[in-house]
Length: 351
Image 1 (tube, helix red, strand yellow):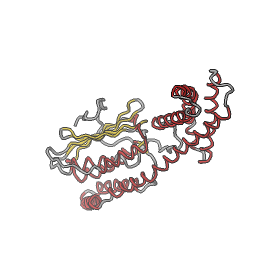
Image 2 (image 1 turned 45 degrees about the vertical axis):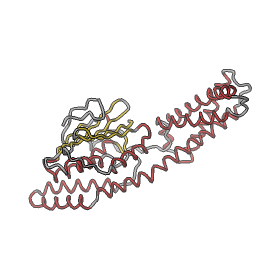
Image 3 (image 1 turned 60 degrees about the vertical axis):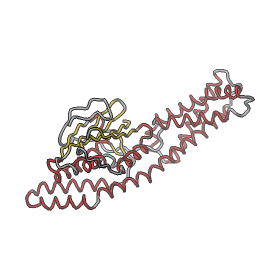
Image 4 (image 1 turned 90 degrees about the vertical axis):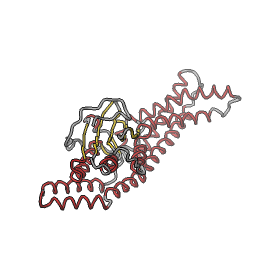
């Protein structure tokens, strides 16, 4: 099956069918809590500070023109200072992550204080304030930085219950009785005639459970999710035989991109459930990854029985969409479409 262009226009790599060379990839790098390197964080921080500036400019403004003038002056200090704080916090992202939480707060607030002084220095250099309010500017920078750091920490904490709930939902789906019983019954049937295949099947099942029962993490690399999907498809390949046709097109340059754990496997499972199971002749499932600059594109495509018209509840897709938003905010994109008996899910995530 050639890769469908339902949701994109880029050219895929030539498909590589078979096992993926993923076992030698590096281990997971811990995700950082205090992170100002994301576009969504930058946009919200700038809008928040600008809102504070607009309110502060109301004090002492005799009329609308005076308010606009005062806001322009304050923006000339606040906007560069905010961007300086965001860039400096992003630059020291990794060292900050090694510190305990109180120290992270202290660094963030300290950078805010310095950013406030920087903004005041700009106004003084341009001759817009005399005398320069150094103390007030440093205090304002520290206070705004404290609010922004608190928002980042609270946002990180808000992810945890949602991620845990989603992971438990995926675990429950994976150990649903009919999937487990079908896998075990298939293994039992193979024990005498093809013991090596039975052993491989049980190893794949064990790997699925190992990932499902692992400690909750905020994110894992794409190569690990592809490896998990490979184990799942190996189990279903034994069950469906020639009815399940699988194509892989993996760009190794994309393999370090971060995803929420257990997010790709339900998409593959969805493709098998709605593409292969209801079709007597089987279906094609294609998984492709591609890096384009700072963005990684992941597509799961499957054919569906012609004229079936049966639609699922969309729970798995909603789960993936919500978890992707929690991790990558506005930088993550999720799309799905069914066109001419081909269904495709497309994910875009930052590298």
